[in-house]
Image (tube, rainbow, N blue to C red; front, side):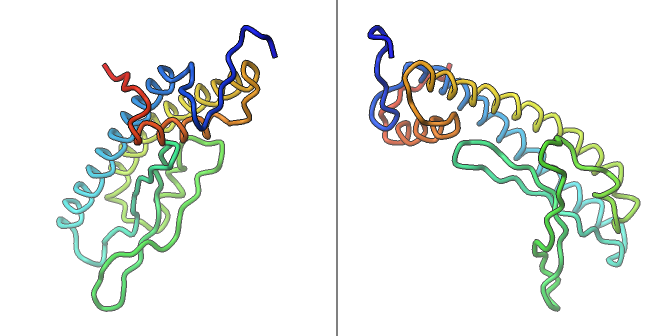
Length: 180
């Protein structure tokens, strides 16, 4: 390692890339907020559509958003079942979209679903796909920062690990807030 490069220990010191990690954090939070708005809109729209149709034509298609420790989000479709006589919905089967794909297949999503739901699901999935694409670009930036720090400082932390450690320091009040 060159003598002019500062040694960085990811668990204790502030990173020279903290401003970039703060920028990424802000953008991941923005995507999570957008995703949550869309998920909420889906559930409200689904209830309104279902109220206009008989009970036998209810949808079993659910949508959820999961926030990971490293701020990445998962926007997932799943099939719902009902619990006994209560008709309370529960998650039953996760629908896969494929690891390297940004969008779910509309054909797969609409299998055994009412026809009246197709346009609404297509609209929601189009918006979710835009979020997934933007997130994949942010993940590439995060991972590239991790690779950069490996080369520059000899750190063994991945981009995801650096983000998690940055967030842990931020929660402890050690990281500066770079939000504008």
